[in-house]
Image (cartoon, rainbow, N blue to C red):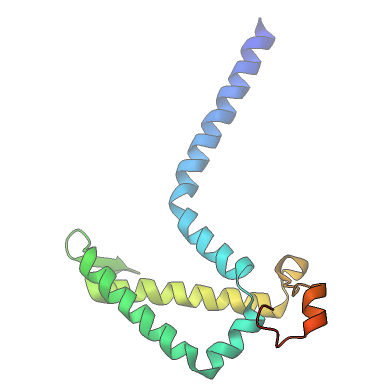
Length: 142
């Protein structure tokens, strides 16, 4: 009976640990998904030249629009945000949040371009099919 009771205690302790861990990590899940997307799903070798040709202006304006819309739709309790010991207005707080998300995305791009994750972040272009080889790249269906 002692063995069964000890086994049940271990199972209860593991269950309790998993519950506390999930409650602690669950609020950070969206940020983890954001980082995973920009690190593993985006091919920065193709995106960086596009950004350097001027798409960063459009991305910056889009992030401003997102910050202004978010500011309008979701006002914090009390009307202000508490950031690093400062009390800032709603619009400044939302701009800081959106800017931080953009900075994190750019940092993920620099990590991928530096080759830090090696084979996990390699984007190999698909090999051309036989139909594409026969008709060339200018074929309308290629």
